[in-house]
Length: 274
Image (cartoon, rainbow, N blue to C red; front, side):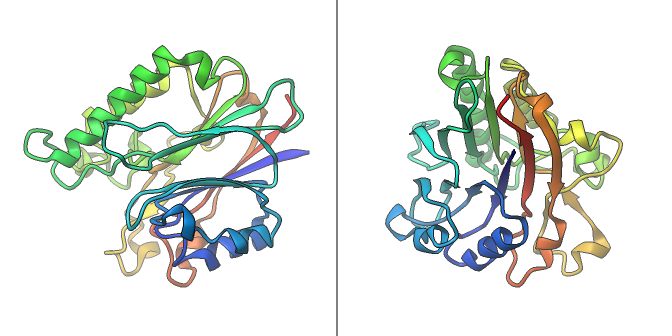
């Protein structure tokens, strides 16, 4: 049986729990990873999700900002969070999924800082925070590779707030100096990916030069017509697990749902146990 994992920056889980329920009704993923939940743990809408069979939950939230969560029909054997940059932000959570394989799957859910508007770390503290966050990820992956679990079975998902490839943005030339596609960011994300050999399974299934976006600004009233998108949401797998990814779906139609997030879900299917 395949394991399906959906990753979605929901942009307030309490405001858009109906959209999460619609995702469940239409795609029925085994695991849902949410970013930017903007919700303290005590107010997370767990009841609505338990009613649909998601009994296992790992939540790390805060009032009004950031926040990540993993809800699952597959049991957890462990869960943890890690802070970055001593900011107190809730931007990472991980669980070990007991899918029946030889070892649990270590699943990481990240929400990397957006970085503000000005791509100058000296003038813009938010951009400096983003670059520092990436650098700390590199160091963590290097120093704690066994803990992270990359040598065997691991998956990393989330809103990484970087569109790394030329075909991940509507215009490579016009966005080279725009936060999310600047060379310093894309190079930083590549270092994170290469540190332990993460495989970008989305682009393995939808290779360049095909354009692929997961985010469209609210400023574009007719987002389909302008199609000025970026691929900010990612699914990576450890080298041993990447071949088990059998399907990728970017649910673009969710951008047209009532009161949508500016991101859409990315759904990855894996043939497990492997």
